[in-house]
Image (cartoon, rainbow, N blue to C red; front, side, top):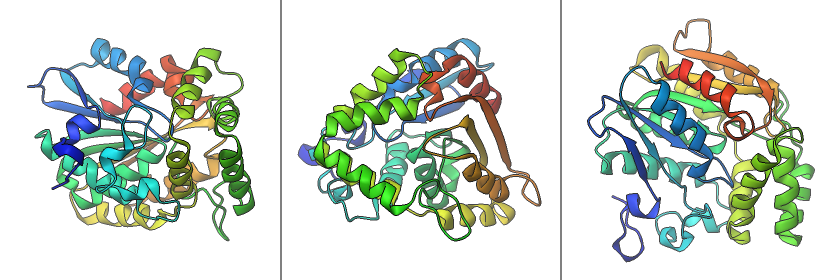
Length: 297
C-alpha cells in the first residue's frame, strides 16, 4: 500500500490517463523518461489506435518529479526524489508502478519504458513478473558511467560538470541538454517540447533525480532478469535503440544484447532504429511508431 499526501490515489497523483476500451484484452503502459511527461507519447497513442490489429487500452502516467506532478504529493512515499544522495529512486518508482497496476486492476501488460523507465520496468518485473507480458525498453542503459569492462558513455568528471551546470543555471542547462539529447538534426518543435518539460521541473528535484539516474548501476538487475528468464515465466524483453544516442552509446545495446538476445535465451529481441537521438518518439515518430507496433504485435 502506498500512502500519498491528502489521501490522493496513485491514479490521481500520477495523472493517469486511460485511452481505449476498458475491456480490451491487451493493455499497453507507456512510461516516459527523465525530464519528460506523458505528452511525449501523443504520436504513439494515435498510432496504436489506428494500427493495432486487436483492441487495446493504453495507460499513460507521469512519474513523481515530472513537471506535470506535484513532488510534494510523494514526499513520504518517494523521498528519494528530493535526496541527491539516494540510490533507491528506481526501486521506489518500480514499487509505485506495481502498486499502480494493481490499483488499476491490470493483470498483465506490455510495458514500454523510455530511458530511466526501462530499468524501472525491469525491477518491477522482477518483483511482480505476472503483471508483465512484455518489456519494451527504449534507449535503455543499466549504467551510464564507464567501468573497467563496460562502456556507459560517461566519466565521473563529465557528470560532475553536468550537475554543476544544472545547479548554476538550470534553465540554460535544460535548453542545451534538450537540443543535444533530442538531436541537433531533429525538428525544432521536438527539441522545444522536451526543453519545456525539462526546464519546468523543480531544479532541486531535477538535480537529485539526475544524480540518482546517471550514477546508478543496474547491471545486476539486467543479469538477474536474464537468469530468471531461463527457468521462470518472465516477460519477453525487447530493446529498441537508435543508431546514434548521446545518452546511450551503441556499446550499451551490445551489452543488453549479450544479456537478453540469442544464446539460450529466446525471449529477447534487439532492433537498432535507423534514426538519431535519445527520444525517437519525439524526433522521428513515424519510424518509431512503426518499430514499436512490430514489437507489440
